[in-house]
Length: 221
Image 1 (spheres, rainbow, N blue to C red):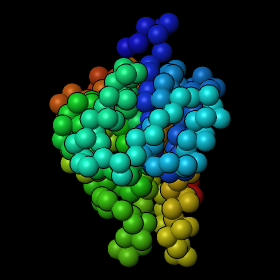
Image 2 (cartoon, rainbow, N blue to C red):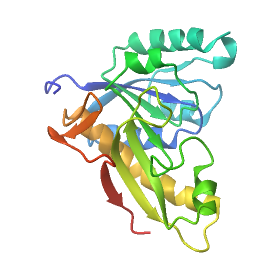
Image 3 (cartoon, rainbow, N blue to C red):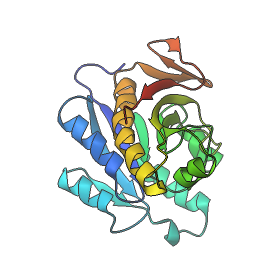
Image 4 (spheres, rainbow, N blue to C red):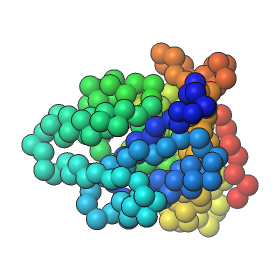
């Protein structure tokens, strides 16, 4: 639990537009999330997410993976940049690089990701197309702690979105994204309040173990 005068420090990693970053910036700004975003790092130059951070007065850094000869050297520089700010929490907001176990272990229990599917279904990419192809009735997004298994860490909260007969992948993606902006700030708020913890592989909220699928948040549309 953070003391009242010391805000939780967050570093956010992005690769693109940063709409989830914006949702967090907004809730930090209005006091819903009691935290300070110390740094936003992108692995891609000239993305809108960096503009969002600059607009909010948040320091930014570019660690372009194309400039490193190995994943190890890229991750070493990421760790150097992140740890220079000594964050309590690392937030992945559309960060499209896969980490080595050394990186995920370094931030074990203090790194969150949001994935656009109801994990463990549809790990990886093209989740909306895959949900439609599978004939699923529901789709959504999942906030989870990050482990060395891709999109495989323990689940915190899931937004469940009904699939409509008329949905295209882009329709579905748009509705899921709205819910991502709801549930990610909730999970981050819980962490910053000291309520959300990871003990081994078990997620706890207010010291109570969560079910394997996390907490369900049902969207109305």
